[in-house]
Length: 273
Ligand SMILES: Nc1ncnc2c1ncn2[C@@H]1O[C@H](COP(=O)(O)OP(=O)(O)O)[C@@H](O)[C@H]1O
Ligand SMILES: [Mg+2]
Image (cartoon, rainbow, N blue to C red; front, side, top):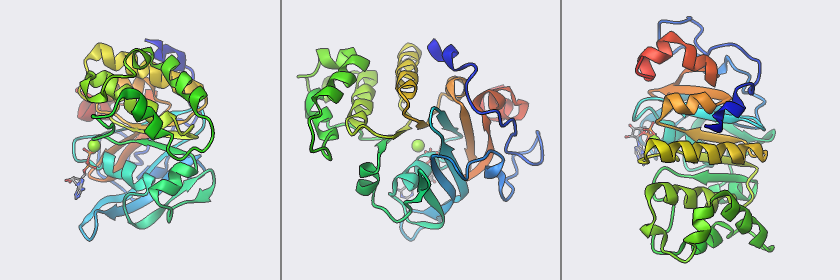
């Protein structure tokens, strides 16, 4: 796949976010900071918080992405990956930590205001309107725009030709991979400055996964940084500039995608050897 194009990408920070070195996953204070994240374009910085008055799900959790990058968040089920994404998008009240976009503290902004600032988010579930047509879904995506968005729609159709073909079909009739294209396309309709994707390849075949990754790389090449959660950890880290392994709401490891792929402990614990 064209992930090869990303071979020589990424920053040159060669640190792995485990100060104890390989061989332990014991979380330590500050483990999220081995990579320079404080000044990243989008950063959820040392986030602690949970749902409503419930217990904390995130503990000092840091995730971040820079321009030109694909950053990938991996980790076991229930680790808090989706929660971290929701926190960055403003769907969670943080008890500690902050979210910054392009140097500005946006911790107090509503999700709507974050969209207006240029954040696009595709949640893990219920990310399309199944009873609406493909085209109506894209139009809904452009809800904050007052200008002519036909050119953006043409770009989305260029990126995902199958959506153009099926534009008058109900989105609910599409295959899993096609629905994910609708969801990503909908998010692109706001012309986001940064795109957040929660498991964009969930429930699709390996071939469709590869195709989706190719399209995501294509989006990244247009200059939109991408912060995404992936359960296909090995494949995702292979195209990632930056990777975060979350365990129980904490950063267990962070580093270049390639480094994490090569790390024996990460391989053994999270990538099936
Ligand atoms: N809406 C919610 N309300 C309360 N607890 C939740 C909610 N969503 C997720 N959780 C809890 O938060 C923890 C992390 O879940 P989640 O972020 O979905 O993990 P992941 O995406 O890594 O699989 C789990 O214990 C889960 O039960
Ligand atoms: Mg999740």
